[in-house]
Length: 139
Image (cartoon, rainbow, N blue to C red; front, side, top):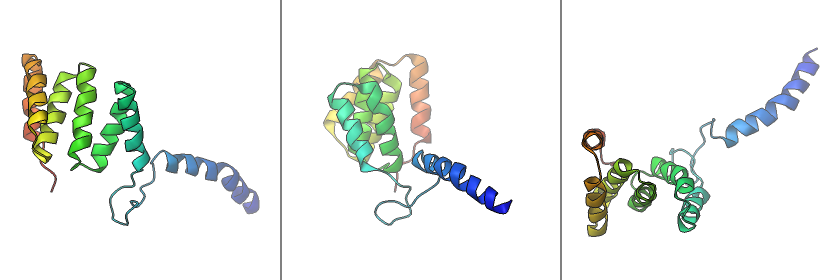
């Protein structure tokens, strides 16, 4: 009986574990040997490919994942803001631009943040201000 259970676990369990692993359910070590979560650089390339194809909605999840795993990457934060602005998500765009500008000061990004902020309603401006209070620059 135990042999059958082991066999069933192998037949059913391994494919399920492989799917869970692929979906990021199990934490893995990073590519560079640090303890940071695993991040596949091809996802950043996919984000940029979606952006170049003007598929802004398709690029956003990839850029969000990129900035989650590398919160100091000002360029990805900026491109996330560009995608959000292209879709009319002004409050998210203004915040993404703000973060990018705080990570690496740029007059272009500051102007983009200002333009996005000017498009916000009063309620969105409150949301934006609350996000600024909660955000801390990564060390």
